[in-house]
Amino acid sequence: MRKDELDAPRPHILVIDDEPHLCELLSYRLEHHGYRVSTEFSARGGLEAIEQGSVDAIILDLRLEDADGIEVLAELQKRTPDLPVIILTAHGTIETAVLAIQRGAYGFLTKPFQDYELLQKLAHAIESGRLKREVAGLRRIVGDTSGDIRLLGTSDSIAAVRERITRVAPADATVLLLGESGTGKELAARSIHALSARKARPFIAVNCGALPAELLESELFGHVRGAFTGASRDKDGLFAAARGGTLLLDEIGEAPPPVQVKLLRVLQEKRFSKVGSPAEEDADVRIVAATNRDLRAEVSAGRFREDLFYRLHVVPIVMPPLRERKDDIPLLAELFLRRSAARYNLPEPHISPEALRVLLAHAWPGNVRELANVMEGAILLCQDERIRPQHILATLATPARAQAASTPGEEAAELSEVEPPIVLPSLAEPSAPLPPLRAARDSFERAYLVEALRRAGGNVSAAAKLAGRNRTDFHDLLRKHGLSGADFKA
Ligand SMILES: Nc1ncnc2c1ncn2[C@@H]1O[C@H](COP(=O)(O)OP(=O)(O)OP(=O)(O)O)[C@@H](O)[C@H]1O
Image (tube, rainbow, N blue to C red; front, side):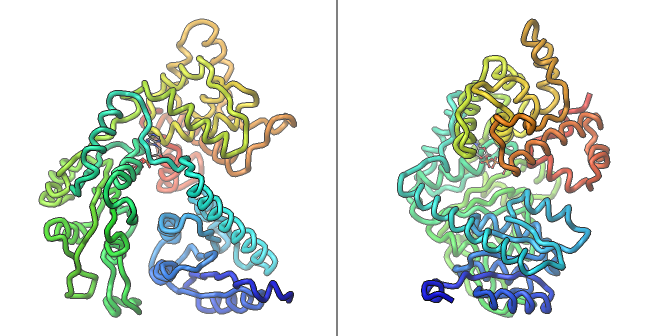
C-alpha cells in the first residue's frame, strides 16, 4: 500500500442485514480491501447508526425482519439524501430491487455476488456520494438557488398563498397545509421555515404515513434503552433533532392513533417524553403539518382525533391545484425546462405555441410535480431547439391528448401524427443527444403506464395485471409519475 493510501481515511461502510453470517462475510471481505465496516441487524439499528454520522455508503438488505427495505430506503433518502445505498437482493426479488433504484438506491447486487462486483459498485457509489456533497457545498458557496424554496407563479391564487406564508412565517403558530399531492406543500413548509426566526436551525420533514406506529413514535420522540426489544441505547427523536427549528409532519392524516395522542400533547403542553421514559422534555419546535386528505372527513369517519384537528387547524393554508391556476403553467414549464437542461447538460429549447396549448389543455392530476416530470421527459425526447406537442404528448396522460387533438387546423394534423403510444428517445439518430439511461428509463416507464391505463380504460387493477405488477407497486409507480386511473375512464 502507498503512503498516501495509508494516510487517507478508510471509507466507512454500514451493512444493514439480518443475516449475521452475511454481515460477517461482508465485513471480512471489505475490511480486507481497506474499508471500515459496521454492521446492524435491524432497520432501527441502521437508522440509529447513520445518526452517528461518518458513514460513506450503505449496503442494505431489502428483507429485514423489523421493516420493509423499501421503507427503510425512503427514510434513509429523507435523512441523508447524498448517502449512496446499495441494495442486496435474493434471486426472484429483482423487481423490488428495480423499484428500489427508482426510489433512489444507487445500485443493487443479487446474492450470491462476486467480490469484484461488490468492490466496483462500492467504489462508484462512494465517489458519487462524494461528488454530490461537493456540488451541494459549492452551491451553498455561490448561492445557487436551483434547490429553490420559493413558490413560483404569477396567478392570484399562488400570490395569495405566498402572501399568507410571508405573514404567518415570523409568528410561531402551527400551520396546516392542505392540498392535493404535488401542489407544493413541502415547498411551502420550507418557505415558512426560511422566513422565520428559526431559519438557522434545522428543518426536518417526516412522513407520518410511511412507518408503523411503534417505529414512528420512536422516530419522532426517541426512546430510552430497554424501551422495547432491540433498543440497546438511548436515542433522540426528530423533535430533539429539530430543536429550535421546524418539523414538517407530512401526511398527518395518516398518523396512527397512538402517535396522534402524543402529538396532541406536544401541541397542548409543548412537552414530550421519549418512548419508555417518564421524564419530559421541552418541545422547542415549530410544527407545520401537511395533508392531501380531507381532514374534516377523517374526523367524521373517526380516523382522526377532533381535538388534534383543532390544534393543527390554527392557520390553514390551501395550496391550489395547478388546473385552477393555469396562468402559472407557462412560467413553471419554462423553469422546469431550464432546470432539466442544466441537469442533463443539454441546450435550452423553447416551447412552441402548439406545445404550450397542449400543456394548457391538460388537467394535471399530479399538479406541479407532474409538470416538472413531463418537462424533463420532453427535453429528453426533443432533438432540436423546439419542444413540440409530440414531446409533451409522449409522456402526458390521455385527456390532454383527446382535448388537444380536437383543436382545429394544422395543429390537429400535427397532433394526429403522434399516436404511437410509447415513444422512446430516438436511439437510431446518432446526432441526437443520448439521454442518461435512468432518464430514458423513467420516460419510457411513464409512457408505458399511460398506455397500460389507456388499454385498461382507467381500471388500475386491470392495468397492473397487464403490466404484470401487483396493485400496490403499480399504484406507487402511478404516484411517482403523477398519473391517476380516473383520468383514463371513459
Ligand atoms: N409553485 C411552485 N414553484 C416551483 N416549484 C414548485 C411549486 N410547487 C411545487 N413545486 C415543485 O413541485 C414538486 C412537488 O412539490 P412538493 O413536494 O412540495 O408537493 P407536495 O404537495 O408536498 O406533494 P406530496 O403531497 O405528494 O408530498 C417539488 O419538486 C417542488 O419543488
